[in-house]
Each structure stands twice: as C-alpha cells, then as structure tokens.
Length: 260
Image 1 (cartoon, one colour):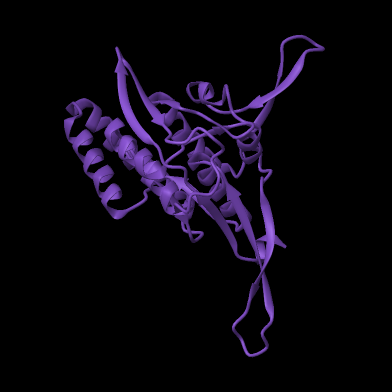
Image 2 (cartoon, helix red, strand yellow):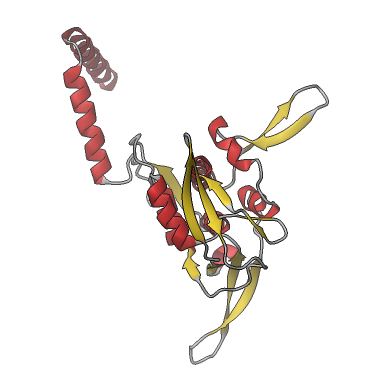
C-alpha cells in the first residue's frame, strides 16, 4: 500500500548552538542544547528532502557549520539521548553512506567468516566509511537496512464534494540524519533511481528519469569532463598519440568489416 499513497517525512528539529573546534588535524562540531530534558516538539519543522540535497552538496567544514546551525540535532542515540559532538570526518562519511543508500536502496551486506563456525554479517561498504557505523542507534540501523521506524498511516479529509477521506503515511523522525535516511527509504519505495556524477570532483547525485544512460549530473559537468579529456590528449607525447590514433583506425576498420 505504501508506494500508492503520499508519504510525508516529519522532522521537528531541535535547535542547538553549534561551534567548530580544531584539534591538530581533527575538526569537530559541538552542539550545545538549551534544554537538557527530552527533545519534545519544538515547532521547528524542516523539509526533509531539501535538507538531504543540501547535506550532500556540502564540501567544507564552514558550509557544514552553517548547515548544522539550521538543521539542528544531527544524530540521536537510543533512549532519547543526543550526540553532542560530530567530527568533520564522520560528517563526510555519512555523505558517502547516504549516496550508497540512494543508489542501492539499502546498504548491501556480506557474510564474514573468520573460522568455519564464526560467521557474522557486516555492511559491504568501503573501508573508509565504516567508522561512522561504530555507534549507530537502533533506529539508524533500521533505516540503513530498509526497516522504517515511527511510520503511521493517517486519514486526511478530502475537499471533494463526496467528502471522502484519503490515506497518507507519516514518518516521524528525531534527528537530521534520521530525516535524511527516511527520504532515501521513501525514494526506494517510489522506485526512484539515482546515479553519482562521473566527474571525480563533483559529489552530486542525480535522478535517472529515462532509460537513456547519462554519466553526468549536468551539461556543465559533461562539458568540464570533455575539456579535461581534450587537454589530456593534447598533453600526451607524440608517440602515445600516434599509437592511440592507430588503434582507433584498426578498430574502425574491424567494425566496418563486421558490418559488411
């Protein structure tokens, strides 16, 4: 039923004073919450999908600081407790994990066997991203595995003459990260496909809306990649250029014979 009905991700953010601190090469964000009780409802509702898009485009600690000051509590842990510190390294790791979620739907898993009897399952993600998963909460782990938390089916009054009520789903989340993970779950339900831009220095994820394959998120990135390829070819030594040209000619002749 869920894919057929509207789904809303409801995030009532808990605001905090966020500071950026540097210790040697380590950069850390600290959250200072004005109230030490349970988060509760604050009335600071934030649109989850646009929050995710902004999160994925952040490239510097300064941009992350501004984002966290607006989005509020980044992570919660079990029993309504808060994470009051977040490293810039883990912020970047979560960006990578969310990109995998958007492409894969849920985090892929694999079996790890140390002995014939000792077997466990772990997330099959790049080694550099795994430190972010060392202290995930039960709720976060559920989202990563495709099991929604706090999902409620509600009725909405219809303004049509028949006054018929319609169903919609509401997902209530308690932190910025949960809101972002919930949007990945919703997109998976709706069958939305995403791809990562092929330009190495572009972090953007783009929606695949047709069967026509494209490598880049925008014409600007495609043009930039084309310019770089052209410059790389021009910078090659003459011997390499001649070899490359000869290879292209041989391939073209082979293709012509195959057609004939």
